[in-house]
Image 1: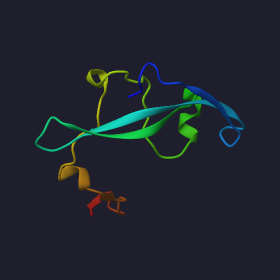
Image 2: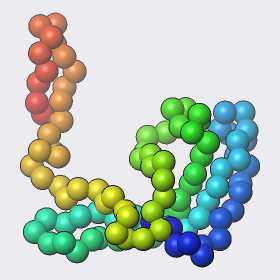
Image 3: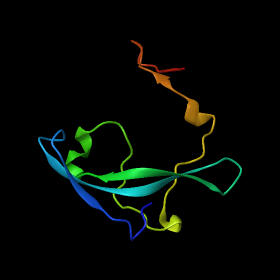
Length: 99
């Protein structure tokens, strides 16, 4: 989330797609906890890059719209047993293995 009154800075990044201007602002990330409606919040820098460059950057989340209010945010889900499951690459038989 980003407060409506937070200053937004335009920063030129030479190392992205031969040079791209990105927007940066202070924001808050939120994720859910098990067995409660309370959100875990932490401050973070929000970086907005032109959409066409998204596939050419490192691993991370993408959000097309930035929430200004907690009620409009979509926090990460609380961790579950299923969120810890990892798959190994397919074998010659075409079947996947769980880690």
